[in-house]
Image (tube, rainbow, N blue to C red; front, side):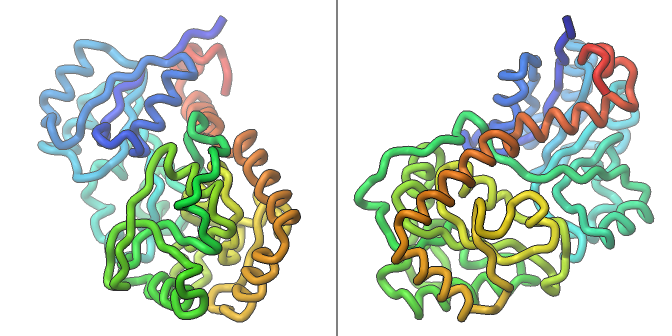
Length: 331
């Protein structure tokens, strides 16, 4: 029988909906032990003492604010395999400037959902040991909830109006949805300069929202509309929680989700095509429900954090004999 890992995990564990909480709960459900280290409360010296006292097998890190203390020295002294995991895009944005000096990018294994060929070159030039892992959704929240009358909108978007300066498309999309569908459209997320009162919806309420709304419009930062093999976890969150999704086409995404099977695509900027799809499925309840259920089932069976973590741990096990042995020789 395989043994399980003890994982020290640096991150932000305060919000119940944080990636770190979902990853931690998934690891525990897989049988592993997790030692949470709150990033903005513990200096690296204290983290090192906790790690040396508990002797975990692996250090995992999801960055929010950055390590307090000498992070580079901390990584050299920790004495166990180290791995980073994040859902965001960095290459091609202003934030890429910090990669050279940020300990997050200097762990033994860096896992992000950026599989673009130019990004791979960028990481290699900077000696970042990067591995492409797609986003996912928390399996315990991957279900179709009850329909609630207050969430029964024709068209919704879940997310911020203000976004990265490199991505003005978000505002263009939301403005177009307001102009085209008026009161039939509702945005949920942080209040923004769209001058609408918007509500943040999380956890079970988010499942109810997706189950109740007819159509969910997706978006993902795609610099110059040609950044391949990166997309937002919004795809998995929407489908896994039971939403019918229309999403911009991104090269690579169709390798996992076939057009017209689990979701529908339109080309960035082709709002005429987007309107055609929206109007088609507003009038076609039966087919919309079939696609929605198919997308939900596919994500639930193939795209949760459990599957993503199994992939990441397998990569680590291939290069570390202790992790391999602890996982029962897998890898």
